[in-house]
Length: 468
Image 1 (cartoon, rainbow, N blue to C red):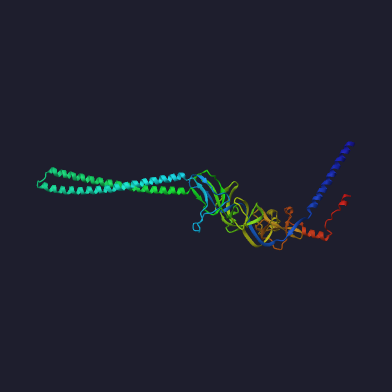
Image 2 (cartoon, rainbow, N blue to C red):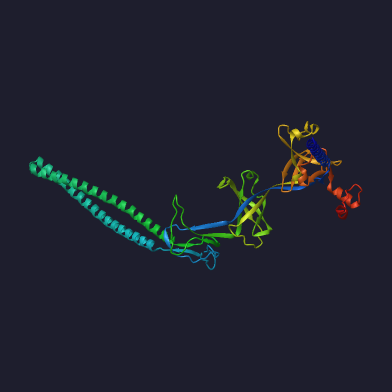
């Protein structure tokens, strides 16, 4: 019995202890619920807000040319180096400015082709002269045939007259008639032979024209062995070495790019704009560009062009927007540098703004009935509504608002707030804890009371007394 009594007393003690702890926790929680949240209170600001989008980008020259060969040949010399200034030349200048020689290709095979084409052309011209002489001889032969035939015709007519008077025999007339027929046949053969020779001469004339075209092409190909600068600029890249064989491009295989020349006076930043933002971008909009190479500088730019079709990349698709880089102030912005681009898409003047973190999303069904019903700023078909908390009589009053565009810090309030309203803007950790008509205290007012020695301010215990 004694043991049972001891166990019962222990159980009763544990239950009493748990009850005391539960009451203490409940009292503490209740006290916490009634504690005023310390908040930051501000009034909306009126001013100008610039809406913008951001995108990564890469620097490229506005004008650049990739130098490739028009013929397949071996490189004999590359007399320029990367970074060297080159010019396209000016024939109208005094004195004449010659273009910079970039590449010299081996032209020995092309010279042989040109000599062969010239020899074939000379042989063809000689054959034409022979044909022309043959035509002259055949025309003379035709005239002789015609004269002989005319003579036989007159003879045949005389003999037929004499045959009537029995002065010549029938055999003599038949023999003359046979010679006349033979003369006619010879004339036809000579005329047909002349036509054939004249037609062959026309063919040879066409072949001569083809030979001339072949010579022209061979001479043109020979000029391709010397490649000069097509524009004023700087050699930014050389991809080949002397002695290498360069190839021309085909439909399926690109040609050898020997070098690249660019005009570094004007540089572009090719921004990769997301599909959701491209509708906001237009030519002429201003932009701000930052580079890791100059972390403390902001470069100005202007949108020059935007692509009308997307470009594929590993993470999806984007639109390329060309931003002209302005006022580099002597900085050498090199091709290939990565950049961050901020394009100003719209500016709103004299609007009411609040810090963006002060705008919260609250479920429509959780809003007070008197605020939710018949409120044009609350769409009952949606799950969430945009609200801010006004500071009225030390309470947080939920207030639906209609918001507009925003930048990195502020958001435009189109409806729902007046310029003299006080709103709760922070701190961020307390914003999501706010409830309608919750007691709050303005941190600035609290600080002023503490400075003025307000009797209601909490007393900080003396460290020595607390230790005792």
